[in-house]
Image (cartoon, rainbow, N blue to C red; front, side, top):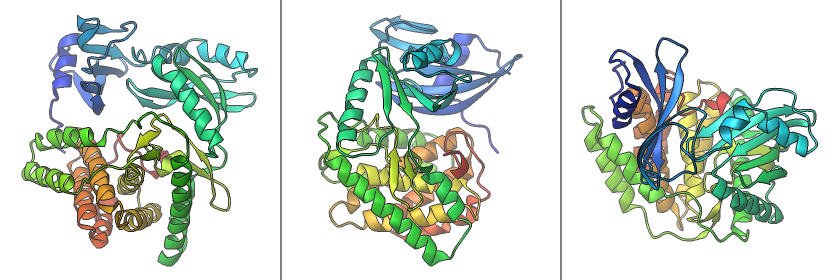
Length: 417
């Protein structure tokens, strides 16, 4: 496998830490943030690997936690050691000190173990699982300025009938504590279903879940939220395409630019409704009958294009299926195909769904390229082409290479969604 290209962020990290040329530095993720990017790296030096983040967002923070260059109100670049994220000042205390234990005690619960970081988007949010005498509690760290809005969003959506986990408490320091979602994770249900039944049964199961998702989308549309959803899909398209086109690979530049141009041609004029903003099956929980009983991670919810949620759902299903070995991945492929047929075939929003699905898939492909996983990137770019052509047979054909695609920390296989 060829080595991943050195990114500008890696060069900044090596300079900031004065790393020797032979020091092993591995990119683990990169995404847009503010006016720039935030990129994570594993640094393998003489000690255990350490994770550093390089942040060129130019966003001001209350207090720097690592190295920074430029004015405090307009920093050019900063570097921090995980979990000391300056955008999430509550994260390090929650992870290492007694902050989580103190918070839970105020809520009448007793922590029974060490907090575990189970999800993290640098500069945006982190989720920690804390075992307590009342069951698992999920503690979320967010930028302090967003805590009150997120608590209010949670209240509005709950009153609209959306089955969110109970919000146990929150702090203006950027902390929210939530109970566990009710039901079984859809990812677990799909993994089990992928090994049983014939194609017709798989279609029936997929359609039943998609019916539930459509009902959930209608519930979101009826909620009284007024702030914009945090999706920024058009900006993400250009960001992903620019970086993919700049990678050194025969033919990839032309392929990516053609996909971008075809995507823009299908973009359409956005409509407005309240949406989840990042709706995929990893956010959903169901009961034994398949009804959705839990929805998590509504940080992105607000007014946006109704096509955004179906697009996120389809793209996440495709990316997960690429990473999930057969036969467990079969059910996810069928779900992706049925979702594409339903939503990209909708005469009212089909073009917009296809364009936004392709945008997400370009993002997944970029992650694969930056991890040095050219085969997986090719599968995802092929899926993006299939989405734009509406060729379900071509989308299905990406199964042929799925089992051999290398695994990545950037997109989880089904058993880790």
